[in-house]
Length: 395
Image (cartoon, rainbow, N blue to C red; front, side, top):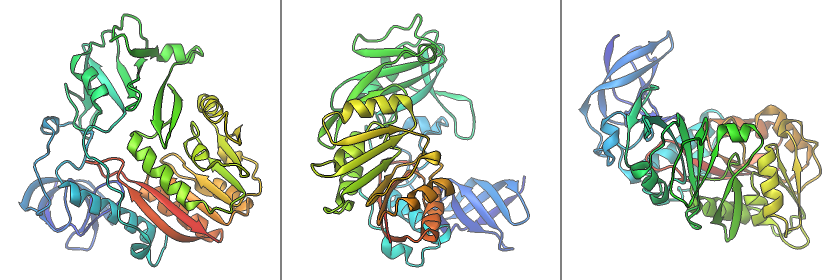
């Protein structure tokens, strides 16, 4: 493998820093910060593109810090940006959003349309983690590897989860997903493959992947956006309650007071549909996950909300004033954008968890006649390059 010296110029979606070698070829560098001089080992080289990892930092950025979590030194790959000062992380995450909207979304004034990031606490926030088990003890994966790193703490995990990482024994379990409601104190563990022989504190609800496959369910509750939400084991919910608060408020603020019909695509357990529901407004919530549909119907039972189970890519569009869409990391794609356009909605509110997918979807929505009005990053995932964005588009 060859080594070269580079000075990265910016970060891009995925968290890598973009540099150019002497021939002008793009090189994406893992772990680098824009402006610093680094020696890089190239591990994936093509004619017009390459990837590399830092061998030596020759001139460090003033934003470079020692990772605050001891497991990073052991190779834990859960947080890819702990080497960057938190305020600089927020700035760089916004830069990623601007770059994606400009480069992939073809937005001319991307920098002027992207707001400053909504900052959230950067420790003890995460309400869901998935861990490997090594002889009953939890481990995360090493960066760029499937190898385990044993852990007994986690900088970003909520204390309700961290206490299980430190003290619980997960005998006979290969992997586990641990979830909690930070404002209810409720905890749920999904064991892979089974809960057989698993012993955890009495307050922890347990279910095995084999139980889920057999049609059984388990759930916990969280409070966010001023309401209580039932969440089943296989239902998605935002990974921190204060983040759900922030996203719900941004979405609520973006729905015009005179909007009579609002469609909430990928509604999950009903967070945004419940937030924007009010007397005299028709809200239609659409979701494909059966467990989440049941949760949404339970959570929204007292609201004027119609919950539909449907594959979003084949959903039959209905006339609407506003469409809210909170897709997975893959984004909307052309089929769903076509359905959104068929609603004739004057406003689309996107809640995106991947900047590159957001850029691609904004491009598709622009081609469908919409224009980007604003984009607000929300720092749901400190110490990583991931960023959530609420984007508003109008036509």
